[in-house]
View 1 (cartoon, rainbow, N blue to C red):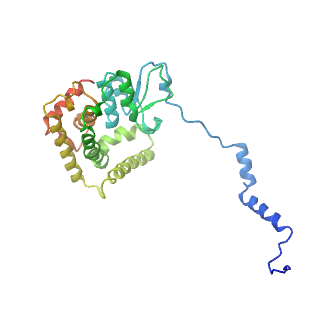
View 2 (cartoon, rainbow, N blue to C red):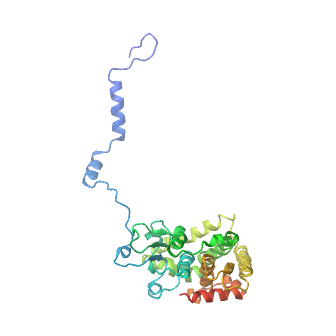
Length: 298
């Protein structure tokens, strides 16, 4: 190799051509692999369509919730609080719908519930839970409940934290309740494969732990039950001797939100093995009667 006057190595005539070839060789697909993909090319499939039953000749509104076949036939309350909240609310405001048994994997948003409105609405545009109240208000011109009382959001937090957190622990992290209630409702109907069932059960329990650890550095069952007790006490005081919360003439969204928990906590058909929440709730007769009155809608 020779050097020029500024002492830098002189590039061979073929070096500049060789580098691009090396780069192409590095990133090129080996011939056997290329022949395989030529024979079986990668295909990007379109998004999953909605469940087939949603595209049938049915004409009414369809609400997709966690429920079983008997629940669909008899219009029973869903065994999932979030689904039951909206199932109850739509009944309370007078909107007819058909229940469809479903799961999160079938939901366009990844969670239940969602509603497919009756034609002539566009059946390709399902309504997620976050937009159900707005849709219901437009359908039946009911009151915007949040505007009736500035305390709505404050008391909603009692459900979203104190009661919901205790519910998550009781259902998923209490071993007896998980085996007797959560597993038959959420795990076993999904598959008959024992390995898949075990994996799904572990995922559900871990999701509950992760949710609870968002608000605490560790999970304390006694603290969760104490918070639930305080929430029930506050709700009982709020309801007082009134028929519905916020003294509404008819049950509204907040009534549905409370009912979604109180009904399932007190429902003997759930099969609870340990029901400390039921014991705490039963101390407030007005909440128990509120639940019984609303259950008549079903």
